[in-house]
Length: 167
Image (cartoon, rainbow, N blue to C red):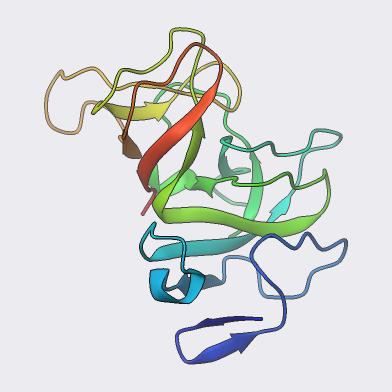
């Protein structure tokens, strides 16, 4: 059982539901002290994978399906530098198509790099390659929708750790 914001959630953040259990877009705080993992506090968001057949995989950034879709209706990101307000979080475990689960909004987690990889200590944004992140070019304030920074270098098309901030 996970505890957050003085509320008790009936399932853990890794549980995938086949029917909706919480309101879409619900956020929950998981304190680092509660997990004992040494990764610090994390904020998670409850979403529906609205893909027709594709599961969210570990490290996939997910976005609101459309700007008019219900909050928390998510699909795998497929565009370069998607506006931060559309990025709902980054999947930290598989969430099957048409299922519900929690994605990481803020905290230390895992991201999937594009085919070019991402260097250590580098800001990143969503990439045109579906479900991946790419180094954010330093071309001025607001030029790209940065959603985190890498801890270590992440090789081509593999996952690595990063500090994620999709708020």
